[in-house]
Length: 502
Image (cartoon, rainbow, N blue to C red; front, side, top):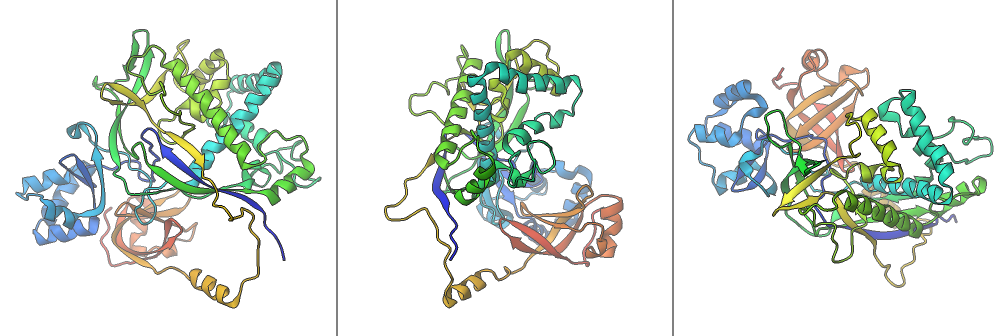
């Protein structure tokens, strides 16, 4: 009988400020939603088609789409044709998803939707949570080096970054070596020589292989909000909004989880794998259990908060960081900024400016970073992405060590039923496009997404679509069959008797 030993904790994230995690749909336009009385309703494409057919408006709709494209506002289209949208019409048109706009709805031209699973539910991917934890652990490892030997930190980190810039290293790959050398360069076998060569480094020698995190789902229903986020810059006369060429402030509308929402998930530490790593890696300063992981998160978050408080010092509108209760200890998603997603708080001010001028816009000797993404609420600046992370107490009598036991016949039968392939689903009139970079078909339907990697074999696609998809690189509409795959969908069939849009 074998044993798999894990340290497992049930955790929660409570949002302290609006949180936005982007989806595969970069933005939604009024062509894809209805706005009424400050509420945004997501359109159902098949329901819209049925309503248009019932009102004999299919041809006028097609003509306007050809003229206006995605700039067509569905509500304006109905008004022009004398159709009044009431509660009954909304039910006939929408997919069941809606969000409240906090701001001037007339100023919103599009918005970035929050990521959802295959059933249309908002969630926070475990990969996003792990990405934040990864940043916190790397940050704390380097912070520890700097505290113990500042000269060594300058030599091994800051000077290395300087050399990368002098050698005109790819801007997108400047920090790769930090991850590889501090988190991925561990030896699993004596012959790996991972510390002496890049060969062997990677996912298999990554310390965070020991950390497993599930997707996080809200504990209860809540109403998503859509808010206007502005980019503000620190100038001599205080914080000023970044402006477009038209003179209007740069505004990004994003769908967010409001403050006060709890997300639950499970985090697991693989003690068996830890023992394998420790055999050939004696002098390790990285976390060895979930308690140390949590300590790293708190240290990192405290430093980010101090850096932000320093940036906003003296700014009357920034009251968020004047914590009267417990301060947040986790930052995730859009608007987190360079201070929370890089090791910037550890670097000298001079080096931060050089990195900004090299990898971004050259702002000379101005503070780096000098801008933040903020929501202005009731004359106060609200930063995005802050949450409280905590582990929940284990129930008495429930161990966190899990024993691998032999399954009974009944358990095997139940397990077999659970592993049966899920029922296929038909998406009528789905929009399909082809991504040549990864040779993948991508279909969207009612704000859901399905994929199929076809490689060089295009026989999966009906021949009538080949020219439009593969040569003209335009989209087509067709009935497709998809199969649920975890939180996503896979395309398993494309029907041929549909009209192309190319």
